[in-house]
Image 1 (cartoon, helix red, strand yellow):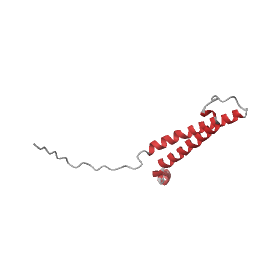
Image 2 (cartoon, rainbow, N blue to C red):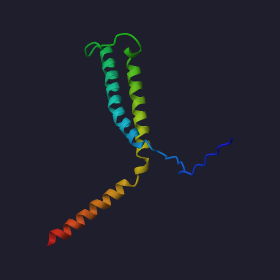
Image 3 (cartoon, rainbow, N blue to C red):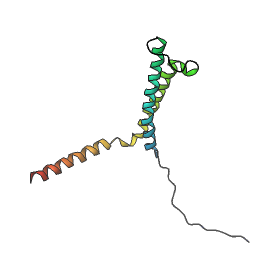
Image 4 (cartoon, helix red, strand yellow):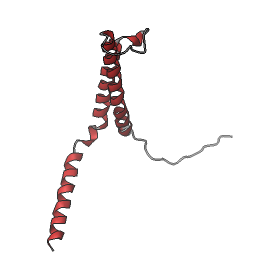
Length: 115
């Protein structure tokens, strides 16, 4: 016995490009303070080596060198820059739209305030 099941054609699957832009913007906003913190730690280590401040808490290992912290800060900031560009790629005309709506609102309030 042969059983055939007929299915109707469903909706076509489409690929949505750039669907995680909001996640990219959120991650970029978190990476910038992390880059600043890494830079401050690198600066602290450098100044501690010059005996200007107190001793740096990490005395041995990979993260005891100021070059590692400054490099990490640069890489984190570069990642934040790339994610910001990716996240804002579809919003290049949003500034113009916002400006038009503000001007229209001013015109409407100017017309209604005259009466």
